[in-house]
Image (spheres, helix red, strand yellow):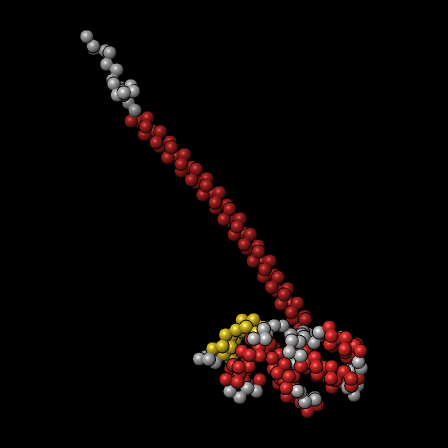
Length: 235
């Protein structure tokens, strides 16, 4: 990314075209917001070379379907760009749905058959570390377990902040509930200890009472060795 930024900073106008093609074809580059922020790239807006800026925005925020809808005013993509844009399309679809049907994916990616689709998902998406998941051939869907993030689209930051705020509020409420449960558990533990102590005291009292009742006034005591004291009445 740093190399592409420096190259973009050193060029202007139409000279940025090849650099943008190289960046959007790079097999390891999937985020483009930093290149979009380069002043010389931003200056393409409203010029005869603005098409290069549109291509860069397409890769930052768009999908393969977006390209097809605007292909009449955009340059033809090279094969590596087509592959990259389809990979990015999978990431966009995975943002909103973790179970992607084969029919939906084949439509969005222009895959002609299931074999082609699965090869793409395995070799170009999963092996590339962009997504992780399970392919279900019987039910014809791809279950997404992980998907890399893309550049934020306009208005998406506010939505993300709201989502995080909601998550934080839920987490705070959950933390309060957990603390209340711990406090309740501690209270019950103390009550249980108190109850056990009272029960043990009562048992001891009962044992003492029974022992006293069994011990009558005429109880015969024995000395060590088992000999009884029988001095009285001896001749």
